[in-house]
Image 1 (cartoon, rainbow, N blue to C red):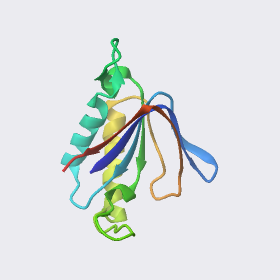
Image 2 (tube, rainbow, N blue to C red; image 1 turned 180 degrees about the vertical axis):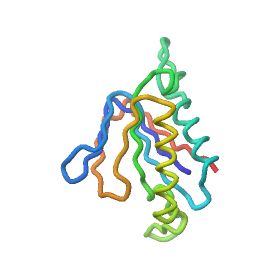
Image 3 (tube, helix red, strand yellow; image 1 turned 180 degrees about the horizontal axis):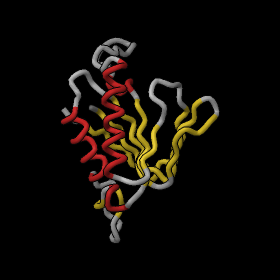
Amino acid sequence: MIALIQRAESARVDVDGLTVGAIGAGLLALVAIEPDDGEAQCARMLERLLGYRVFSDDQGRMNLGLAETGGGLLLVSQFTLAADTRKGMRPSFTTAAPPEHGRRWFDRLVELARAAHPGVEIGQFGAHMKVHLVNDGPVTFCLEVR
């Protein structure tokens, strides 16, 4: 499982001109499910999403995780993060999970996140989404869980 996380001042996802998920300050996480992902990867990724220290403490150091700040979490399925880009000029998506597997484990990640943290919003799986972000910093990290 891969998550590209971005510290956000605000973020939202629109589908067909309607906002389907939005947060104020917090994290936008673009999430790719890979073929071997399951319960263990969901649990570990959630632990990292909530605990990864990307928010400033009183001294201005990135020393606080999302769980400590109480910020929002916007989860957006993004299978293209799992693309194999090592050769050629076109990405290969053979390294991404098939849609039914991806939906199952993305939905499970959302379920775990909502049970553990207030303010969890989501995009729309499989839809053409417009993702709007005011990146705070900018602060962006790629997290991987195998």
